[in-house]
Amino acid sequence: MENTPITELSFEDALIQLENIVRELESGRIKLDDAVKAYERAVSLKQLCEKKLKDAQLKIEKIEISPNGEISTTPLDKVEE
Image 1 (tube, rainbow, N blue to C red):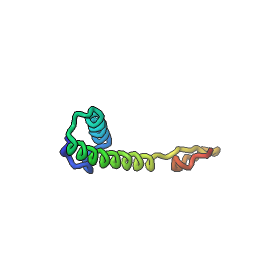
Image 2: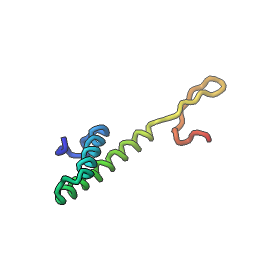
Image 3: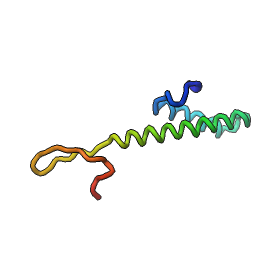
């Protein structure tokens, strides 16, 4: 799975790979060249996860029901404070 192009990974698969790389790097039992390559992949995986989360957030909407019973939606980030 680690040879799969990052752009083809699901959020969950990318997160699993990222967690595995972090564990491997934290263990200190990895050669320097391999650590650099792993770090570079981890950065790309992190960026993919952040993008997928942002895309999902943009799709989330708040459902509102007006006093007269009409249903509408608004972006979640426009929720009244």
